[in-house]
Length: 172
Ligand code: S3P
Image (tube, rainbow, N blue to C red):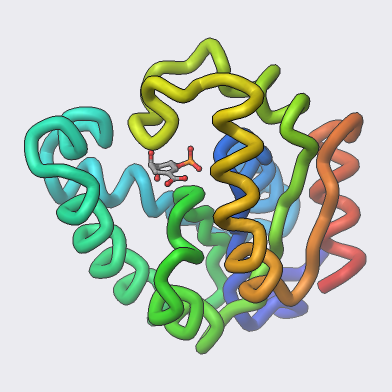
């Protein structure tokens, strides 16, 4: 694929564990486009891990940094942007990302998400409620925002990274 086919950004959103960063890196290779990881940029800016930001300064501060980083990456062109799972919770973030980008929502069943993220303790949002029920309840709160943000939605259960990327490319 020639990169000239994609003059806009490809923005990946979705719940934790839907594969945004894995798929984003794969797309970046396949399409020869640069990529940006909003979580990584926030950690760089703060000089500490997301877990530490939450612990020291709270979620509101994390969301503020996230908003700044999203505004910054939204100005780019021809870039794969993969976002933290909470980016769609602010309408302003979605509006910014949409300016130069197509928003791709990755989805998965709660059972699949649980399998993918339950062993990982770097995600403070689910701290203390890392259970199938905890995931279901957070998904329920967020589903509307995820669906409203999406230009294209791709279900990721039982699909390889390669299959997901290929499907995204055909839908762009
Ligand atoms: C969050 C998801 C995380 C990270 C932070 C908050 C969320 O990103 O931004 O822990 O609110 O869903 P991933 O979706 O990449 O895990």
